[in-house]
Image (cartoon, rainbow over all chains, first blue to last red; front, side, top):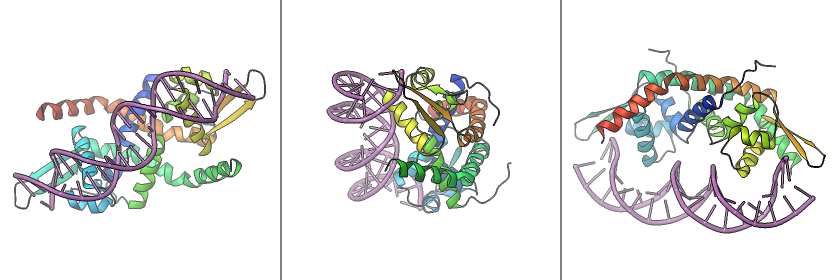
Length: 122
Length: 122
DNA sequence: CTGGATCCTTGCGGATACTG
DNA sequence: CAGTATCCGCAAGGATCCAG
């Protein structure tokens, strides 16, 4: 059994907030790709794959607003815009990566549980 | 600067999946409360606070399906149903707690960045 | 190339009423 | 007490067109 300590409501709320912030459909994928280095808009778009440009814009604006990403515009023609993780963005990658690691190691257990549940409630 | 290693798409997808699984409005709050020990339906309801009974049911079914929670029915009158974290559920609490810890420590930085962004784009 | 504006579909989540 | 069933509003997200 793992350590047990009381979980205060306020802490859980904070956790819930950040998880909803980061738990939308595209945020972690975008942050993950930017974790390998700065990318231009369309580079990012094809690197992530399957994301509409509206959602990429929305996601990037949100990340920029919260200080996870910087947006650099080169006033050339055609325009060029680079997106890069801030230090805060890289730091976020650590606990998110840990959760990802956990996910990778436990997908099978979840899939098994799911199959069993679906079998029982057929 | 923090360590940089390539983030493969498949891994990012796995992270994204688990984050969306756990990133809905109530899941972590419910799991957090259950982290302190088993609870009955209405105990959980009032412990979480603000959750409708429909969403509590939905959330619990999902957690049960994925093997994070067990559901124990006592065939008494009135009925009594206990919910408890499985080992998998407790283990999930670890990386989620780490992310929560990160969130607690960095909320101020995010709030500052957000205020700055909103100020510039007033 | 970057991304704003618009339309449209979908599903989450809340409120309420009913049941064993 | 512990749910199920139903209706409904709203916002997320996709597709498309347009602009600098």
